Each structure stands twice: as C-alpha cells, then as structure tokens.
Image (cartoon, rainbow, N blue to C red):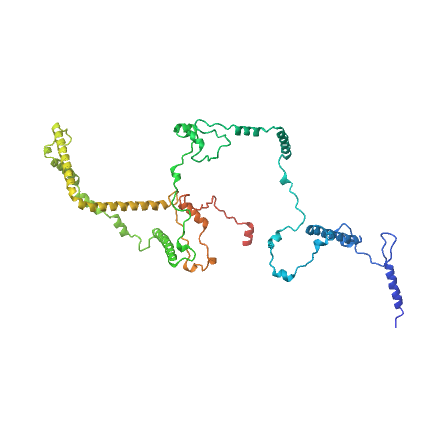
Length: 486
C-alpha cells in the first residue's frame, strides 16, 4: 500500500519524461544553458581551442577528416616510392600474371640463371625516385669564360688562325734545335728521349766529362760527399732477433730447460751482487768488533822491522859506489892509472877508448856471423820452433778476430748509463699453455723495441725521469675535518 505523500508510478514516469524533454531545451542567447543540466566544473566550458588540453574536447568531424586525409596522402606517397605510382592507375599486366608452368616440371629442371645474393638484394635501392642531381659536381671554375674562349678559338680555327702556344710548338717541331760540337743539345728539343737525371749515363753530363776538378767545382754544383762513418751500420745486430727455442709455443723439454737455466743464472748473479753489497754495508757484530789489543797490534805493525832494516843498511849507500868504481876500473886494463872523476881526459885516453870500442864491435859482428853460419846446420831443429811460433801467431789472430766480432755486437757506451740486458721472458713448466688459445703473452713489444734500439747503438741507454718536488708538501687541517674529528 503506498503512502499518501508518495507519487504514483505514472506521475514518476511523467516527471522522467518531462526531465528528458527539458534536457533538449535550447536557450535564445549564447550564454543560456539547460536548467535541468548541472553547471560545468570549468567556467570556460570546453576550453580554448588553440590549447592541447582542448584538442580532445573540440575534436569533431573536421578533425576526423584531417586524419583521413593524412593517411590517404601517406599511402599515396608510399605507392609512389615503392611502385612508381598509384595501384589503381597501373595496368593489369603489371600487377598480375598467368602461371602456365608446371610445378613438378619446374622442380626437376635446374635454374639456368643464378640468383643474386640476399645481401645484394638488401643493398639495392627500394625507392623509385631518382636521387637529386649534385649541381656542385658539374660546376667548373670560370666555366662561362672558358666556354666563350673555346668558341672564339673555334671560329678563329675555321679562318686558319692558330693560338700562339700552338704556333710556337709547331715551329719547334719543324725546326728542332741543333746539337753543339760535343754532340749534346740544350735540352729544349721536345722530340728527345727520356732519361734519368740521377743515373750515371745522363746526356747532360757528357759535356763535363774529363774536365778539371776545379772547373767542375766552379761550374757545376757537386754533391756533398757522404762520410765513411755513415756508410757503416752502428751495430751488426739484426733489427729483429729470434728468441731462443725455449721461448716459443709448445717448446721441447731440452730447449725449455736450457732457457730456464739461462734465466736462473741471471737471477743468481743478481742475488749474489745484492748479497755482496749487503755484506759490505753491514755493521760488524760484537764478536767481530775491534778490541784494544787488536787496535794496538795494528798500530805497532811493522815498526820493529823498519828499525832493524835501518841499522843494517847504514853503510849500504856506499857499497854501490865502490862496486861501480871497481867495475869501471877493471873493465879496461889501460885505465888502471886513470885520474879521479871530473878531470879532463887526454888525447891518448880518448884514442884508446875509441880503439877499444871498435875492437868490441868487430868481435860482436864476427860472433854474430859465426852464429848465423852455425844455424844453417840447425834447420831441422829450428823447423818445429817455427811451426810452434806460427801456430801461436794464428791462435792470437783468431782470438783477436773473435774479440773484434764480439765487440761489434756488444752495445757501446754512448751516455752516462750502461746498457742493461732485459729480463728473459720465460714461463715455468707449470705455466706452459696446452693450446694456442690459452697462451699468455710475455713481456712488452714496446719495451722490446726500445731495448733493441739501445742495443744496436741507435740511441743511448735511458731511464725513466724521476719526479722531483720543487716545494715540500704542507699539510693543513681543514675546519670541516676538525669538526668531525673533535
């Protein structure tokens, strides 16, 4: 049972129909609105049309038409690029073909024409539009001027007028220059043969053959004489040295052990040098430290021997003088009655000395002649001595040559530093790779080439420059750091 205040269903339907009819109310002014519709949230209605926010609200049939027009234009441009024009205007023969071949027969027959590669098909241009013409590639500097000049000479050539350069060239061809008395021309004949100006058979040098050196020096510019030291290489070592067999990939056991022994000897020598330096710089221990007795013994060393030698040799300086006087006096019996040293010799004494010298020289020459005569009978005994002497000379010669060859390949002292051999690049037995893919590189190519230049005496040995600070560092504690530490 319905309440008396409630509206009947018919009345509600009438109200709904009236509200629906009132929603289509249209006012007389622009600002009028439907009284049954709620006011919009924005006072401006749909918003500005020139803003992106209002595009979606203001879109309508004209926007849809614009999109359809854009799609149609894009489709037309795609057809023009790929097919050369719209499909609707193409004839049927270009779009369709009649397949009259037998499929089984085509499979049996081998294609006679080779198909292009896929990469070639990809690289082919898809567009049917030809590329734009590069106008700059066809431009010639002063093209109009040269064109007018060429047209002018064509008109003059019809009248029989030839350009000056062409006329002079024809005259030279008709009247070639005559050769001089030496048989050489001045080098202006265009019909002459080609020759190398740097070769020894240069025809221009025939006129200067056999001339005086001073004349050639004043007439022709001579080449600078290359010094002999520049003709010889600074070292006989090759630019690329072959490494030992033990350093190659997958070496034999013997070659690898030999290379390991070489590296071990280098390291052992370096360790011995360090130990020697350490021994020299070490401070002596308490057992080796000097005591008072050893210091006193070192101070008294040799004092007693010097005193005994001084006592025994007091009269020794006079002995040689007496022996010398006796030797002089007994050497010649005619000088026994000689006067004291310092007096002037007489004429008789000088004659006796001269005769004694001549007699001694005559006896010496006779003795030498007798000895040579006796040596003729000793040829058999001399031959082994000669062979031994020649063998010794040959051995010395070979040793000098070996030393000279060794010095030729050794680096020289070019600067204040000495050349140091680089470390041997070797891998241990456990580090040898099983395959070339697992091989680890050893050393540095740049360092190897740098050491090779030093070893071949092309550059002096160098070392890396050490950084030397000009001013000492000054440490300052910042305020922010002080606040954190406190």
